[in-house]
Image (tube, rainbow, N blue to C red; front, side, top):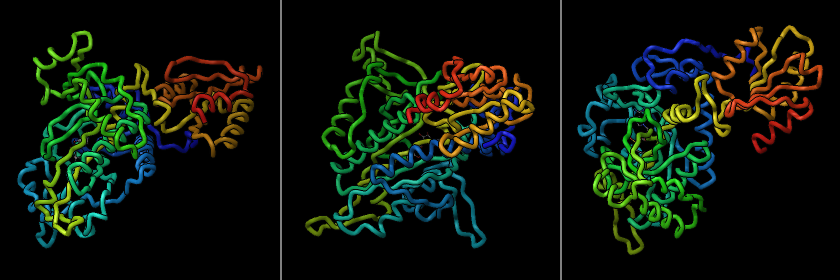
Length: 441
Ligand code: 5CA
């Protein structure tokens, strides 16, 4: 993309209503703009980041035989009345009538909707196990929407739902999603810990929250820092290992405020390993057994021909919140530092002076030759170099390639790696291999 074509409007001013760095930077880097309280327009740069994250998540589901579908944003009140949550969910649910006076709602989550889909299809134990998921915008009329996309009223969630014939198998699906989610967060370049958590309005008996440490996070967390040493990588088909990971993880104290017991924490965890801090919840998973299948009558025939209730769990990732969380964990005073895994562009090619024939010729040539293979944002605008470099640090593309006549006359090019803020002068012939090495492709 040429910057002259890109719809990118950055700003130097810190928005007065933004209190955390990720919110300020998302506004200043032209990623989002508020439409109304807790509701945002995703401008092209923001949307690129969101889609990048979405696609990384999608890929790992695809590789593990997990089905993507798409349920609507608008749901019928009928299924929520059956589950009992139409009243229980409270004021966070946005309810309205259509022209025929049918009661509708903007989905805050999808346990009822997905159960209503699968109960028409699952007949026999042979149909199990299955996991389905979608990416969909949710609406929750939060009392205090704040921190930009961190706590929005409208937000993008990736929610998955598992279906099994009994507790043992459902536990396995839960362990599979637990490990899958830890792997996904790692591939997004994020350091995440799972915490024992309350089940809240979703219900159920088993639940974990996935949290990124951050002083500005909304959750209070208490944990044994050795929990970071657990390795979660395993084949998701290896049932024994999956269960072992979930159980082994339980060896370390990791609790959110709701589950935290001060005496237990101090007794079980040596002082030097104790961490009390705050964090951002980027995912939350639940095992709720037959809670919804009972209410909505979702059954199947077992091997002996007996009618049984389906066992389920649900697994959410806050996709739009992740954009904020990634920036919260990766920035400095100048701007964003995208981890290479999720960067909306891989390279920012900066033409120091667009009126200079030598630098322009090099840039155009490099851009047209490589744009198909490397994701390049090409700053071809007629701006002062100071302004270009200021913007480059603000939008945080991992590699800045700075092309000016003076260096080119010595066959050199300047590169700045945004993560370390280190600059390198390299021979122009080595540019491609520098980029390839950096991204390991
Ligand atoms: N149905 C279950 C799991 S699929 C569910 O709704 N879980 S949840 O309520 O915990 O939400 C899942 C994730 O969505 C949270 O971990 C969080 O990352 C994100 N999320 C929840 N509320 C908001 C919000 N108001 N703004 C942004 N993200 C949110």
